[in-house]
Image (tube, rainbow, N blue to C red; front, side, top):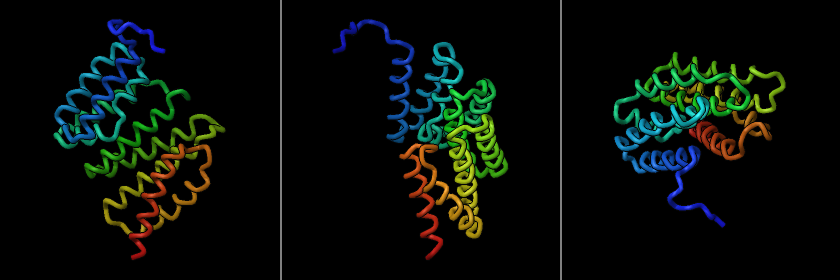
Amino acid sequence: MNTRNQHEPRTPNEEAWSRWDLVDQLASLGRCDEAVRAQQELLDWARDALTPDRLLWVMSGEAPARCWMAVGRHEEWLAIFRELLGRVPRQSANRLQRLDYLRTAGLVLVGLGHRDDALRVAGMMRDLAEEEPGWPRALWPQIEARVLELRLHDAAGDRVAMRRDAAAIAPLLERSGQAVEASRVRELLAYVRGILEDLSK
């Protein structure tokens, strides 16, 4: 039973989730100007209220990132990405959050046609896998790096490279076990198998 007084101030975590929910809903509805404004306000608030690694979570959503692109503010989004990633210490506790942010940045860069920058992000993903010897989830960033390269080849229409990458990624996903979240495995398998099916036509 919730005995919290309705007039009691929210905790920073509750406030963060409330603000994030607004950003996500606006982005999902395609109300991109409002979504970008709400996310900028969330980030401004979070800089004082949250720890630095939580700022990655504030900005790592894919749908809001696409909104920044839609309203022509992608360079601002990328500048924030570079700033935040440079501020956060490399710790095991935030490694998956850094991976998520890199994954979204990769999608943005592919969408903008920034091939070299996207390849650098793929390299940063692979670096995550090597930060801690014996990390049981090291396969995840390696897979995400291959998927990002596949997306680059898809955007370029390089069918030979697409077939090579997709054929390599599928078995990695199938044997990923506990290294990758099950929902992400299903999502990526659907993408990779769709690529292979299209290439076989």
